[in-house]
Length: 363
Ligand code: PEP
Ligand code: MN
Image 1 (cartoon, helix red, strand yellow):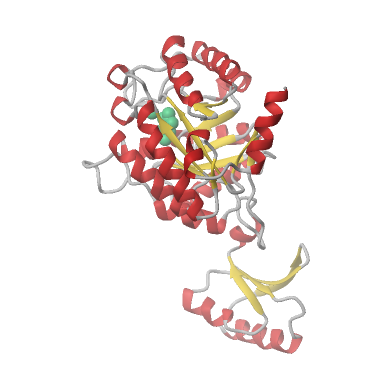
Image 2: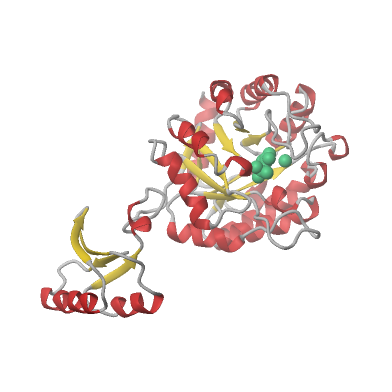
């Protein structure tokens, strides 16, 4: 536990605090890290004990050493970071919409959906080529052929591609075709895989493990960041709770707000996998934006009845229109911009978006 001291704290007051720490039976060491004066306590003081120490005049704040030292945390007030891919930024006041089918099923299916999404001004396209299915007999994805389809889509519609990496053996293939590498909920605690993507120079979209606490989720991100890759986008996608009938997993909206408080990383929400039902997606998306999410990832299929995976949660493209309009309004309430031209009726165009459009017209 670290007691961070205020700058220029009165040494007499600090001595009084140290005396109290000693009398309470804790060993401590005085330290200075990155210009901050602090006292490091050994052991795990109780909540009430920490509150007592917090009440001393020289104390700025009391934090765990994790919170202070790990890259994922705000460590001494670090400002929000954002991730920019192909000139498009997630975080920093921008709310992005990532949409696309659960699985890449064929070129025709992917192209049909991408065309509709692109027309709505959606700039991030998702689609799984390697599918982590509960049953080994279910459709497992088109694998490398699926990746090649995604590359063609990226070129044709100038979209950013998000796709899942399941296995470290496919890392080169996924890197060749993806702009953002997704690590799914099942691999959120696969530390060997996290370390490998930590060595890449590509953004990683890290989903929360289905039974990860917030701390475990953030430490999974730390596995990536400690290898040198700081371009991590967190994704809340629901956790397993006692509710198992009415919906698929419980979307932990509170976690979104908590993560925004303690971490500087952007966090998006996947309401589709959380709910498992298309009709819940709009409301959960709006709630996520209100809770502080920097983006939404939604599964879309133009013929959900034919979808080879996650048919029940796939929104038809036209159902996105009212979602986008309302999302833009909620974003505006929080001083943020929903980055989708179909939302333009609900908000004023962001100046950086305008500049990008003018530039791409010139190009
Ligand atoms: C997905 O996004 O395609 C997916 C499988 O999600 P999750 O890992 O959250 O289940
Ligand atoms: Mn899916």
